[in-house]
Image (spheres, one colour):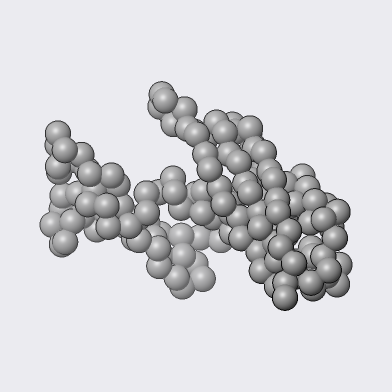
Length: 150
């Protein structure tokens, strides 16, 4: 796996904190920093997600992928899955994640709660590389709700 991240600056200038990541699979992700009122050249323009937001989003994508795949392999009629991640970071550098809560909403027809609970647990204990890495610095908790499809 590979990725190239390039500084773009702000609107073609070499100020600001915009970056573009080009992934090995041929996709592009824009990232930007938060604006810095005191030193505008050191801050971003809030035009894209922060790099750490993309880490959190990638973790959500990784674990949601696992949950859906595990439920489908169990031949459950899963129709939707979302995960809302909330986090806290250390106040001092490096500002690693210290707390992450993942709340899953799974929609399906006749999907047992025990199957969702098992899928979430398997993702976090065995399959989700991203959350297992983040668990080295963060306390990760999970919850879920099950919505019966019409």
